[in-house]
Length: 228
Image 1 (cartoon, rainbow, N blue to C red):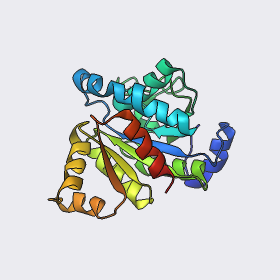
Image 2: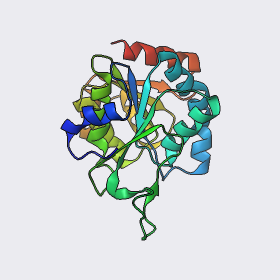
Image 3: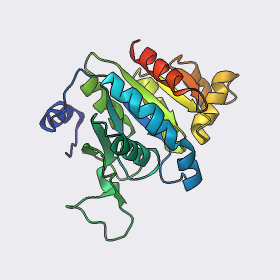
Image 4: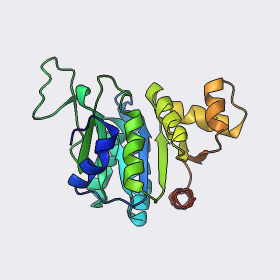
């Protein structure tokens, strides 16, 4: 489904057959710059940790939808485990290749095939989708809760976390997953050293679970944060 304005979202999501009033998780973080070693290092987090927790909560997942990084891992983990929760990709229309839009430059990015729904939003640069992730989350949650989960991540992940805090959504940071997530996790354990990180930490909306923690602890924290 393509949308151009925020006010189109309720109708668009309804036409996609998505129900509102369910808790949801917005997954943000690493994409194409994650290498095979990094992906394999966090694969069990998805298969054995996040996906079972999401299924147990009857939650919906929203992410960037492309066939890369954590979005690829989420799609694959959902398929491997046979879970059936909605998995919605929110992607920039101008950056992806679809059957009705072939990018002959070879620069178009493919969508992850195990996602159940896609919302294509205006833009021509990665990161243009960032505010739309949380608009979709707010429409679908209605009065239910929404939680953002940060795994790894580069520069765009900083904007995603900022947008989450701006929207009032709590953020669970997976410490030890690399890059942006580790920088923020370290700042939460000790005083932040730069203004950008300090503003996020001072929101009191961020919390850390370490990648090496028991997956039961991860499930408990996700449930707790979604109940706030």
